[in-house]
Length: 77
Image 1 (cartoon, rainbow, N blue to C red):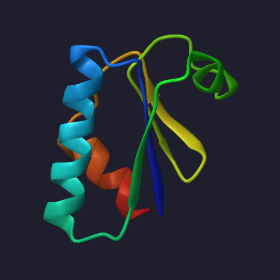
Image 2 (spheres, rainbow, N blue to C red):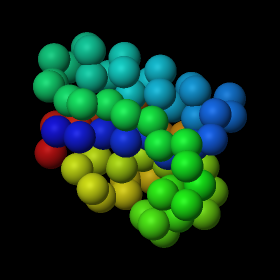
Image 3 (cartoon, one colour):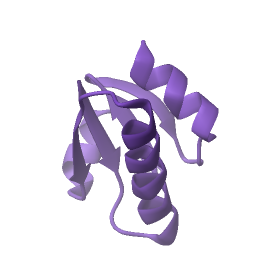
Image 4 (cartoon, rainbow, N blue to C red):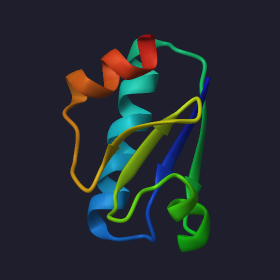
């Protein structure tokens, strides 16, 4: 599973990265987590506001913070 955190480094982007890492660790799912800071690459996903979360190439959320439960459901499916 490939998880990408979209954001230029703002506080919410950092918080999303922490949340995703915590959920992955707690669930025991094997996932490659990367940060995408390049605004041009972020825009290729159609995301105009950050933070954003992409799981296996599919945008799950953009412009707001998901809950831990939302992240769990996205990484398990």
